[in-house]
Length: 556
Ligand code: AMP
Image (cartoon, rainbow, N blue to C red; front, side, top):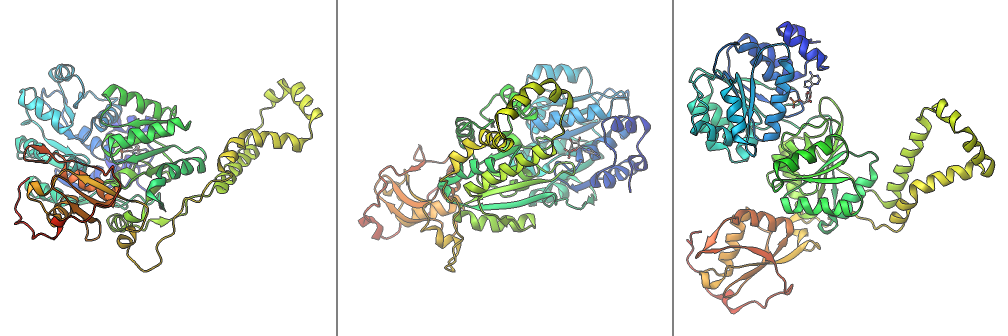
C-alpha cells in the first residue's frame, strides 16, 4: 500500500497534508507525484474531479519551484473561477509551512485587486484563460519565466470555447516549460494540443480515469417529457436526506425548475450564469452549509464545484454535449464515497442515452419511477430506522420525565406511535394517495425509439420565421433544420412552408438542439428564431410544397 511518505515529498508538505486529514494517496496521486518530482516530463492524465488531481499536480509544483525568485514559475489554467478559487485554496493549505505566493486570477472579479496581488509577487498563478489573456495584453503578466503549465479540466476549457486562448497562452510560454494536462475525456482537440505543445508526454491512466467513477450508480427513468417536474419531485421525496444537484440545459430552465421546487416547499436554489458572482457565491455557501439541499444548476455554472457528500446528481435533461455527462456525474461519489446519478429520459432521448453508454463505457440501468405508495413506504422505513437506531439521551429523558409519564398515562403506546407517524406522514400520504404512475413503458412493437417518438405526447408543432420569400421551400427548410440540429432522419416531420414562415413537428428536445444550432444566425438582416406554434393546428399543405426545390446554397 502506498503512503504519502513513500512518494518522495518533503517533510514540510507531508506535515501540511497530514493536518488536512489526507491519510493515503489516491491512485492518480500515487502515479503522478513520484514521477513529476523525479523527472522533468510532460504528462497527460485521464482524471476527473474528485480523484484528487489537484494534489497530484499541486504537490509536485510546490516541490519544484524555487523560493526567492521574483517571477512566476508555475501557471495553472482552469475553466471556471470556482475551480480557480478551489485550486488556489488547496495550494494555500499544502504550502502552510513554506513561503510561496499563490495568486488566483479569474473573470467576474475586480481586476485592480488581482493586479495589485500580482505586483506584490506571485510564484504560482492559477487562472481562467480569458482573464489571463487580458492581463497579458495589459503587460501585467509575462509568461516567459513559467517552468510548469498545468491544463486542468482541459476538455472543459475547450468545450467552453477557450481553444484560441489556450493556443495563445501556450505559444507565449518558454519552449522548455513542462506541460501537465489533466482531462476527464480525450476529444480530438486535446490530442491536437498534446501533439502541438507537448514533448513526448507520459500517459497516466489510473483505474477509473477517463471513465465514470465506479462508485457512482447510474440509473435512468423513462418518462413522458411533460411530467419532468412531477418525476423530479417524486424522486426528491423518495430519497430521505437527499443532497442533490439537478442539472438543466439552459439558464431559463434552471431558474424555472428552482422556482417550481421552491414553490412546492423544497429547500432548493439555482446556480447559473445570469447570476452575479456574489449571488453565486452566496448560493454555493448556502448549499455547502446545507441551508439548501437541492441545487439546480447549468453545466457551466456547476463545473469544477467540489462539495463533499452530494448523494445524487439528477439529469433533468441529458446534456446537449454528452461529454458533459461525465463532469455532471462526477459531482457525486467524491473522494471514495458512493453516489447515484439519475437521468430523466423521454422516449425521444433514448437513442442519446445509448450513445452516452458508449461514451462512458457503462450500462445505465433502467429503474421505474417510484409509485406514490413506494415513496411513503420508503420514508416510513427510514423513520423507523432512525427511531430504532437513535441513542436515547438519559439526561433529556430525565428532565422531561413528568411530561412523558403524563402522555403515557393518557395514551396507549401504540396510539402514541400512530400519532407520531401521522404527524410525519399525513402530508405525504395526502399527496400520494392517488398519485399517478409516472412511468411509460418502453416500446415493444419493435420500432426504434425514433419512430416510436412520433406517436408520443412529446411532439409539438413549431414555428420558424423563414419561408418562400427567403427562397426556401419546404425541403430546403427541412434540410436546414436537420443540418443545424444535427438531426437523424426521423427527428422532424410535417414541415410546411408558407410565404414568410414555416412550421414543423418535433419533440422539445430536438427543437432545443435546432435552437442551439441557429443561435445568432440572421437572414437578410433578420434574426432567425423558433417558437412553439401558437395556432397548434396542422397547416394545409401549401401548393408551394409541390414546387420544384430551389437551388441550394443560401448563406447564413
Ligand atoms: P480533487 O479531485 O483534487 O478536486 O479532490 C477532490 C476532493 O478530495 C478534495 O476535497 C480534496 O481535498 C480531497 N482529497 C484529495 N486527495 C485526498 C486524499 N489523498 N485523501 C483524502 N482526501 C483527498
